[in-house]
Length: 197
Image (tube, rainbow, N blue to C red; front, side, top):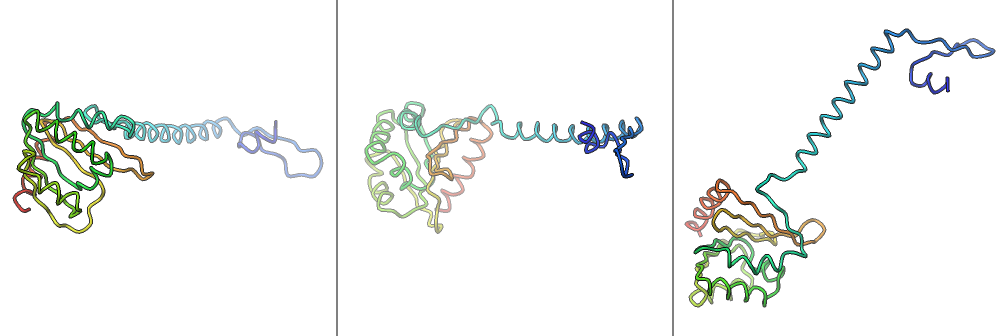
């Protein structure tokens, strides 16, 4: 036990040969040592609190995991009042959900009367086929050829901004942000892209 106290700096062992005699460190030095340790612990606690705050999503942001996405995706058209922006890789849409789910999504949107503007960043056969069906599916598609685009896509309607993507482990996820400010900023961005496409 005295050896443990010695390692922690509370007692000092004698350096003479023979039985070891331990001398207590003066109380003011122990107090200083505890103050220094206390400050280190407080700094660590503050950093941990900051990290915990960073890990929490803002109230207007939700992340949906792969298991919930198909039903959520098919219900998007019911939430569109009149207009939706679709931006990204259409190939990602087909790969994430499959061609039948995408056909059902479009059919539901058209039935609801929602118009779509699609800004497509890939030139896959899926995307070319989509653009060829614009008239019958109440949509206008424009292409932006900008090299490689990640396998992801976004929707903007009302105050909702949705981004579907694959995470680093290959799981499909969606980030939903509900915010008039974010929606307005994204609308301006998409309108500029549209004008340049």
